[in-house]
Image (cartoon, rainbow, N blue to C red; front, top):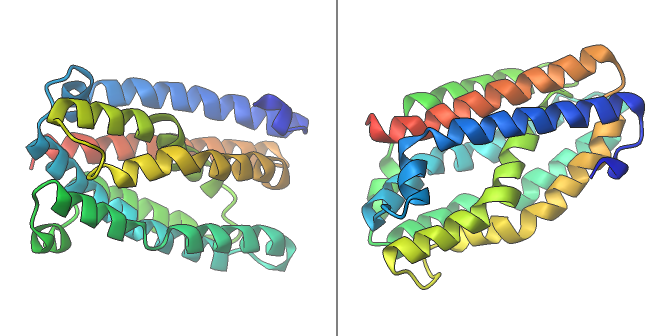
Amino acid sequence: MESKVTTRVGQECLQGLMRVWFDFERQLGRVPVIQRLERGRFTRADYRTLLLHLRQQVIEGARWITRGASSFDRDFADVRSEVIGHAQEEHRDYEMLEADFVAAGGEPDEIREAQRNAGSEALHAFMMYRASQPNPVDLIGAMWIIEGLGQKMAGDWARRIDEATDGDGRYTRFMRYHGENDDAHLDKLYALIDRVCRTQRDLQSILRTARVVARLYALQLEEIDHG
């Protein structure tokens, strides 16, 4: 992976992001709903609840990305174009998630009317705040965590969910889709690291945002058992 990032600061940033990711994996391992999934004690009701809580992050994702794109000035026009393209690809992903919820036995109105949990509220507020700053290069850190979930975990989660609930893949399409397609999104992130991480200040900002997003994402999942 490191060969995709060529500058010295970019290499340092990538190594830091990988350390944040490993810590994030440990955080997820302590989340009750993920523990049930990994231990094979996951039910279809657990899955519907998981989708119910993930929807708010998914539906707001394109808003964060679009807001971030609008905050880049002319010196980052190429980055703005890349970010807009990413938002276009994902802005209706929530519809696939809602369809999975219904296929797993949920009611459409239940998921559409559900409110954000405390972790989702905090994640949304932080992301909108960071995306509104001038030239928010630190959003690379947020995307590293969120896209990393799709690339590294979504496919495995889908497989485990189907095994635990006797599923046949028809209600895990959202996770399978991200497990299959987020490799390409991460490749774009590798290219952007060299472009936007030019100084030690950029580096620290990117890593800080990655750490905050990792913690808030884990909190979002922890709240599933507190609702």
